[in-house]
Image 1: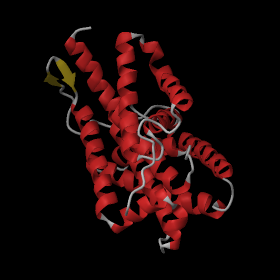
Image 2 (image 1 turned 90 degrees about the horizontal axis):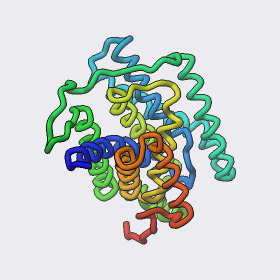
Image 3 (image 1 turned 90 degrees about the vertical axis):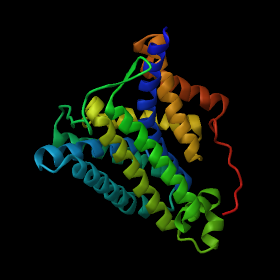
Image 4 (image 1 turned 120 degrees about the vertical axis):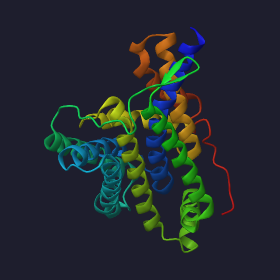
Length: 293
């Protein structure tokens, strides 16, 4: 394989890996605050893309307004989901709550199929289609948007954790929820905020990927599993680890096309997931570190 081909696969992997990283962040945020795996996370991605398509194509809003409004709407859906489906059952077992998220995923998927149909929907790219040449590889403007937005999201999230009282409260809840509650932190509000941020990150991933690969009512389950594999690879209790895991997964998938066969691309995610669960269940960066907040 020549260098320009390798670079092309690497850029493609970074693009898909950035999407997986945003979805993995959603899994991590909710797991840290509730110890729950939210299997409806992929549906937030699906809703983000489809709502943006409707706001742009049917309502006629400018693209940037449609994208931002879609993220806000899905964030509100995340809050409503936590309030109506998770909070009333907070004293039940985690397994029960996981089953609830699976049921919510099926419900959202079927509602989306009724509202938007089975056909794939598309959004225009954010800033044109003309590829940029870089060391022999081609980079589309939308891929640059995906990577830059993911970097900005991770940086802002770290600043939120380190520089704000609410962010420190979220970290305290993730490290020791009981101690955080005794210190006067409103853990119920933290859980609601975790669902809001998780839904927002999922919607952001959905609107970023739609101009590249289109979207439909059925994409949520597939992308959700990829994001979950990335979160497990990096560490479910570590947001930075989730980002590293998602990007690593995307790059490995892309390189597998060049070195093995494109038919094995999707199997790579689940093979990695099984290997990590057998060898290091806490993930690459999943070791919990005691921190003073």
